[in-house]
Amino acid sequence: METQYLLTQNDMPTRWYNVAPDLPAPLPPALHPATLEPMTPDDLSAIFPMDLIMQEASQERFIEIPKEVQEILQLWRPTPLIRATRLEQALGTPAKIFFKYEGTSPTASHKPNTAVAQAYYNKIAGITRLSTETGAGQWGAALSMACNFFDLECKVYMVRVSYEQKPGRRSLMHMFGGQVTPSPSDETESGRALLANEANYPGSLGMAISEAVEIAMNNKNTNYALGSVLNHVLLHQTVIGEEALMQLEMAGTEADVVIGCVGGGSNFGGIALPFYRRNVTDGTKTRLVAVEPMACPTLTKGPYAYDYGDTAKMAPVVKMNTLGHDFVPSGIHAGGLRYHGVSPILALLHEHKLIEAVAYFQVPVFEAAALFTRCEGIVPAPESAHAIRAAIDEALDAKQKDDERTIVFNLSGNGFLDLASYDSYMAGKLEDYAYPEENIRQSLTKLPQVQF
Ligand SMILES: *Cc1c(COP(=O)(O)O)cnc(C)c1O
Image (cartoon, rainbow, N blue to C red):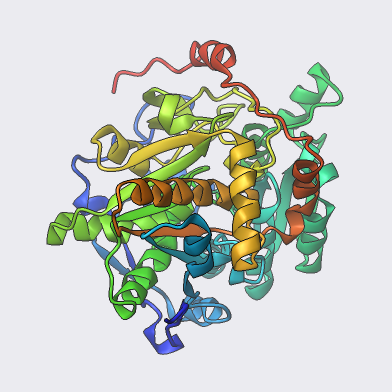
């Protein structure tokens, strides 16, 4: 039996899939954070290049991937689809389990798929520097790498706790020439305002976004880049699902269920949206399951409402599931899943019951990661381990019902730079933080009142 389903570089997708024309309803407009009126392309052009602004609002089903972007993606794409036969045996399940392995990229996650595209469009627009935020460091590393390929400077605001706890990814950013500053910092007005409140803020993604957006607004040659949530980011990630569709055909099977972890929603959107297109156009019934941490349960518990994308209210206001823009989740080890909001595309699909969502505590997630490592030999990123947990539970359900379903999950990243988290798990020091109901309730009292 074959284990790996490999495509050649000639098979690499040459177009991204844009889900917009296939959505069950139009996406509600993004609003200006100051006026709460719909944003115009002009408003967005202060921080994004026009090509990306056009992609954000595009209604074309397919968009060509520029040659310059394809050439860099080919450094690691296509990525393998692997059948987890040893995991199947360990579970004693009749189900087939496949995973798409995005940890083979140079920075070990799916994030370079969009970082390269974003750096390219900024480069051809004449921008010389990109600013961004990063939590665990995956996005900062991906963007630093992409900027390095296109001769752009890269300025990264890294959430302070992670800056101190995850020196490995900081080094990776430095290797690619990125400049990394712990956030909140004294370099920006929003950072200084926070530090005036509390000198030792551990930081949050929402705060770091405010700092990165601020310097992009104030410098003509600097633009801002976001690693998830936005429509164009999910668009760039669809190469994952397009490849997976071809690879499942090679394997002679069809996906009954496709699973991915969700922070802002880009790796899940990347694998799931091409399967969603087939559900719409071919009438297939592939279930699409988004997996989140119980400590930050955006899709499972957050209302579908307009909210700010960041703490200082500088980023666009979008309609999504949200836990409130100043909600600070507890310090779970899956740093990439600690965002208060989620992609508006996924929120809309969830609202129409076209995707499902589940949430897990971190201890069972790490148990799943340990079993996976021992069976398949790969240490997953703690974020990706959420998808593994859900895939294992699907396989156990299939076992109980004696049903040979095909399960596909996205292994969004490798965990070699997260080994300290695994040390905590093995030492029995991981906590299952309770679902933060009261904090969320308070944070939700601060949603903007909008008329849309
Ligand atoms: C950033 C990250 C995530 C979460 O982000 P999404 O945009 O939801 O994909 C998941 N897995 C890994 C490995 C990450 O680096």
